[in-house]
Image 1 (tube, rainbow, N blue to C red):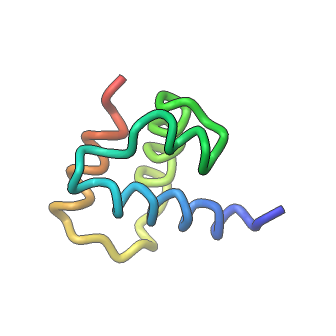
Image 2: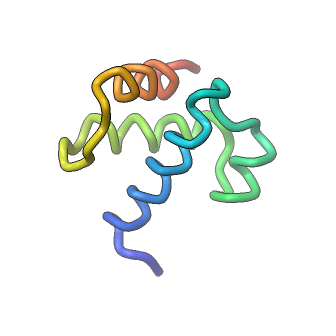
Amino acid sequence: MMPRQTEDAVVLDFARRWEPYGGADASEILLCFGLSVDEFRARLHRILTRTTAYDLDPGVYRRLLRYAATR
């Protein structure tokens, strides 16, 4: 089992890579993480609002937060 910080970094990296395309589709999220889109977005939201340790461009941060808040 991966440490939480490492898991969070993987989720954040995945979201950042897919952000220019409007996010990954449901099948890609399910394949990579075993989560539904809503579960993935909720997890991403928790990561983004829980820590400031990640070096994100403010524009990317806002777009990811907006994506994560979409239900």
